[in-house]
Length: 363
Image (cartoon, rainbow, N blue to C red; front, side, top):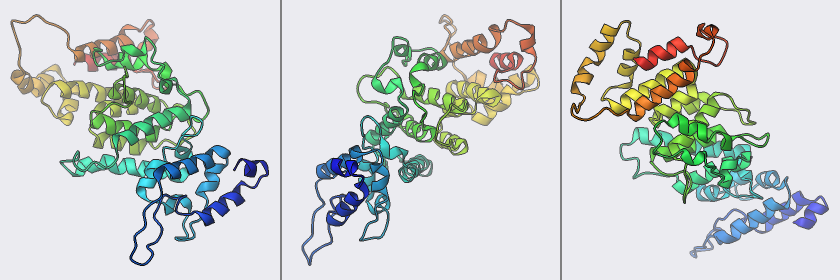
């Protein structure tokens, strides 16, 4: 293969391999001979063979995927079985997950993730019928970070990032701590569609995004990535925000949806999440209460919930995590205002109206 690259005949060499060992190249069993069944080639042999091909040249990935299967007449990716695709999609070459950058492989992965997210919404016992392994999802997350050359994939959890733990009083502060390690170092950028979908499933399953010791919870990482996607961080991949937002809703992840939407609507969802996580109230009712015309209407809407909420009169007051979060929002958008002009509704800027934020948080 190295000689083929040097002599500029890589395509011809792969055509010979495709004709000579088509089954080994696709990890599939040959056709049955009579009544004698044949076994699939070794998985190790398949991965070693494909790895050698992909490492031979930067053009090898595209040449391999363009090969036609003589048996089915289909291109390489569409001629292999589903478990072969799961294994092949995660092949790494010099620290890059090259397959995830190819259009047909990426489209297949997105469709599998989409199906996995939609599946729990249709079946009550989703955990019994789980299809995509956690290990594959973790590799998708790591592979996306690797392709963007972010510091987080190298395990560079700095002292600031180590603060992003479950003990943090406000997940917004935890997100800020890991912001720097998520910045892409190349023009490729983050593939938000793949990354968010995989993290949504892991968060839904309450599983870690990386095996071993990690100081960053899955939900915090998901929140930070959604905020980056919402602010349209540069990437070579076209971000399908509508589909991803729908996936957040199907996964019942209001935090991720709020940060993805951003702006006033995102802040409303963020406050709604704080209310519904502490009180037995529906999302629509919480949103309606936040926009009550008067304080009396607000009391009427929330009165029943407040009466049913347990209060311990003997205990001393201690701010809850939700209250710390509201204080963070007030500090960020209201108390940090230093000029009168900032109270004018900034329609053409990314900043939120301090009056709007204050009214929403105090309610």
